[in-house]
Length: 262
Image 1 (cartoon, one colour):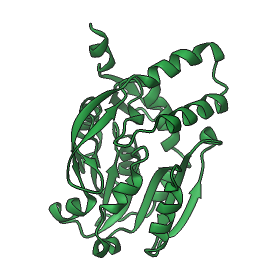
Image 2 (cartoon, one colour; image 1 turned 30 degrees about the vertical axis):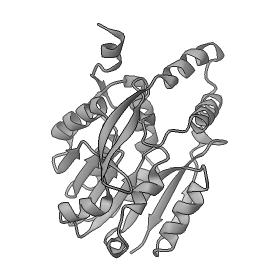
Image 3 (cartoon, rainbow, N blue to C red; image 1 turned 120 degrees about the vertical axis):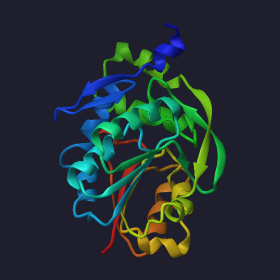
Image 4 (cartoon, rainbow, N blue to C red; image 1 turned 30 degrees about the horizontal axis):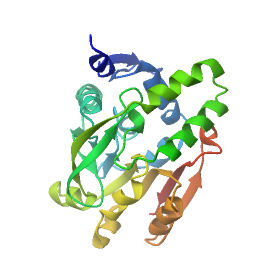
């Protein structure tokens, strides 16, 4: 097997709840599920989402957040977006097996429709992005390793794996066009995890469409004033906005924004 094929191999991982998911890396799937499952912002955000409301999972990766959402709101329709080819293959399999009301779309979401270059990290696919920033990536990796008290001798290999990347050209849509094309009138939850492209996702919603969206859960990287801009955009449209930071990223740029309204 070539190195590239090894990077792209798809396996499976059994989550603590007994669900077996398709993934490119078991360790990554285990870490991501720990961030989502239990008493987390994800569970808080999905609580109370109604059967007549749609959940939009932007930056779905392999679909772990959507698995959480379908567990808490089984009657809600879920539409998930993931542009990377290998990751989307996992997402598609996981939706077919575990998200009966779900639709997986091989798309990125941003401020304009079209095509863009997408930076894919085969060894750490969850950090793949339309909006690369080496300094921000390095900062968050180092604080994560420090906060996890990661073995010093293993850190050089981890850094090397995080730096492996390749470019894919992906199709990009706006949320405004998604709401139009899928005739969506009620969004119970818009979840965003797009590695520094979160503001562009929000800019793709037309002003008259904002009343359709009841809650937003976004992971935001606070560079170039991004966190303040996201909070201001949501607060200015009538949302109650709360910001928190997971202990794993204390000292880094990654924050979770939860915006709600009745």
